[in-house]
Length: 146
Image (cartoon, rainbow, N blue to C red; front, top):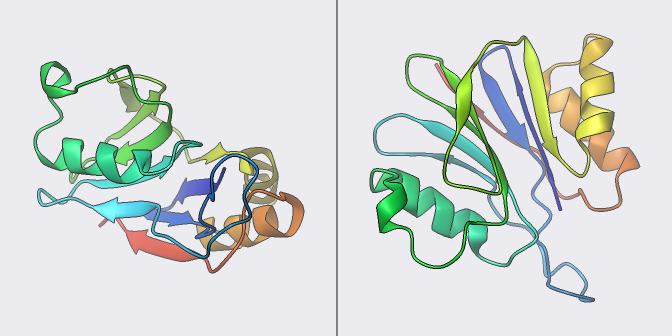
């Protein structure tokens, strides 16, 4: 899966690409995206291409009536240009705005949340998750949401 972390205006993620059922990772990929309206989104999914499809759908307006097929199998942290945070969990309807100091999603989320509870930055928390979660890896990428 992945680790995506938000703290202090920074959205960070690992970059390990999912290779599909029973396959090794084919390399690295982008899991955090800046949309054309300035929204920043971090996405985790066990479905090949779902993150990219979801980001493109959000960038096109995110209208639930324009999504084709079943609800997306993913988790997402969505930060609007004004700083409001929303969460998506296996669906097209978002919870929020959420008020919290920090948050993490994905298979390495528990490690990242523990690291942030001890004062780690978003980037440091992803490094901790990579060190302890076998499904997170690669380089850490980060985007400032401000």
